[in-house]
Image (cartoon, rainbow, N blue to C red; front, side, top):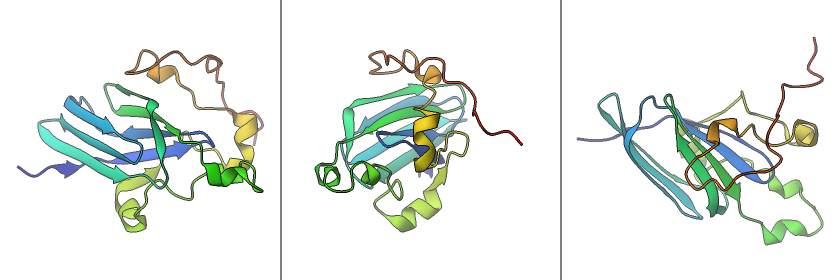
Length: 157
C-alpha cells in the first residue's frame, strides 16, 4: 500500500527550526533525524504517511527533540553552526531562505507556520519558540529560559 505524503509546516529562528507534521492521532511512528535529512513514517486515521526531506543546510540531530501530540508531531530541530557564516556577515546567514535543499519539492510539501513565524529582523524582540508543547518530549533535556513566552508585544492596531 503506497504511503501518503504527510503535510508539514515550519517556522525558524537563527538557531533552530520548529517543524510540525500535521497529522492527528499518529500511531506506529518511526522518526529518523540525521544531520542532513528527516524521515518520518506513521499511521493516522488508518492511512500510512511519510516524510522524506533533505534540509537546506545541516542540522544538529543530537540536540533536536520531538513529541507526538494528539493533533500533530512537533519537532524542535537545532541548526548546525555554520563555519562559513561566521565571517563578515555575522549572524545574517543564520536564517535559511527555505527549509529544503530541493526548491520544487518545498513548493509542494512545505508550508510556512504563520502562527510561529517571526521575521528575522524582529527575532530579538520576539525571542525563541514557545516550547511548552514539547515539555517532556523525546530527547528533551530541559531548556532553561524558555518559559513564559508571552503574546506579541507591539502588535496593536
